[in-house]
Length: 209
Image 1 (tube, rainbow, N blue to C red):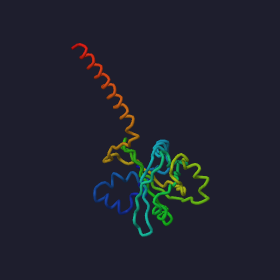
Image 2: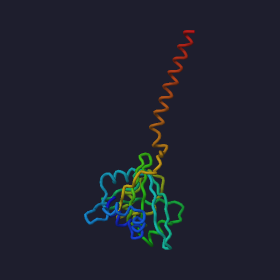
Image 3: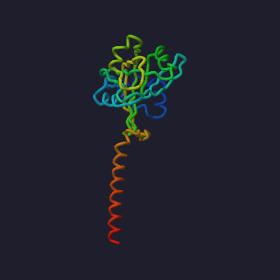
Image 4: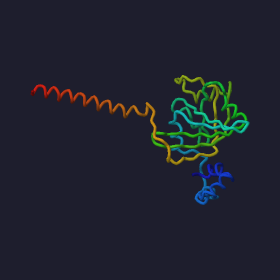
């Protein structure tokens, strides 16, 4: 766990619970002065982010309520602009604009990116800049895949405050139809081969009867 994440996550109340539960000492090293990291993405994080076709994002309303939403798009629609910035084209949905409204009042955002087949999870905290209207034209050219059916309404730019790779415990292993296809193709081929072989053996047995 990098220092940047611990600085945000380990609030005084969290530290109090850690003390009570006996885990505070184990986490102290992440808040030490010589601890570092967690604000600038490396090649591993960049590759992971740009392979995703969706993520969960959390915002906070002006009345203090958290709101969690799944954002989806073509694989790679969440782009790494540089080591401290990621962005995505915000596609039109049900037009409630809960996340956008929340971000206008409080720019803080939290993302959870999942890789269910490999049981990996990346958490990102950052601050959002919303680029809307005519101002979004140029950047949406970079962010939007014209082959995707979604209609982009704005660009969401996220300056990373902290990130952390989370432990894989309790992450269920799941696969999409696309991810399953190579396995299913192999099974279909095996079934076809066995069917052909069974037919050959049946024909051979019949000729020897």
